[in-house]
Length: 380
Image (cartoon, rainbow, N blue to C red; front, top):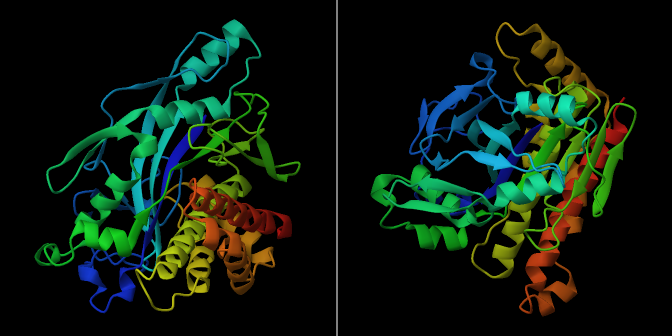
């Protein structure tokens, strides 16, 4: 079983006449990043050179220098079964689209030897996706920032520290006094609460969740949302329950995973932009459509890993699925804008009882879910 903890990031420093001191390299969003390292994060990798972990973007920055795991993570994913399973890290990555949206993505897998041993000894046990998400979100990680801070805190509370890490990494040294973390962070840059994406294979039967929202179901794909219970009423867990094996993600599953994660990240970024404009912290036009157009372009042109024929066929099939859909970036942008745009009630009552934050979370989930359902329903 694979899962990733994803922190969506919004960066609107492009609205500042000096980009608020943001570095020009890495040239995120360009074909060539023109850099080998992201400062304070780690080396920049292209997928064609490494197939480590689940595939995503054509290039990304490792976050091994930033994100540390102070201990091993042993989870109890089977309710009523007193057996823990090691969740081992497979990647720590950062990506930014160069326009407005990025993400920290921390990937893990449950130890497959333990999964097979439990299947032999205990038979048909069922794994709880909400429990997996809840347990990992409560677990601690450590962040080593460029200003020499070492911050240990649960995954669920790491958003602001990750925001600071990105600002420190991407701001010119000579500009840090002018464009300090608090000024830039309060206006132009934000990191949202994490959500968890899980893929379960046929070896790990999924327990039925009481709180569940189906996004898509067909003969070859089942995608639903559920709640960890650790972040209020947010549907903060997305799950693909697959009939394929643990290590055999299908092209359609890959497309669903990549699109959902990235469209939810873009939806967060647009929501952040609307809130900052409404509170008069930033100003200036910013179109959602180019970011969606770029996302679809990246997914259509995902480079296969060198020498991996299976991966090459998967990338080709994923591109063909996208080609046969009737997705319109303009229509998707319009639907997301309509879903996320603050309503009258939210503007008037947003200051009470966290009402605004809850409504924003619901709107982001709804926008990402609707867009993903549209994609999967319009394909072959």
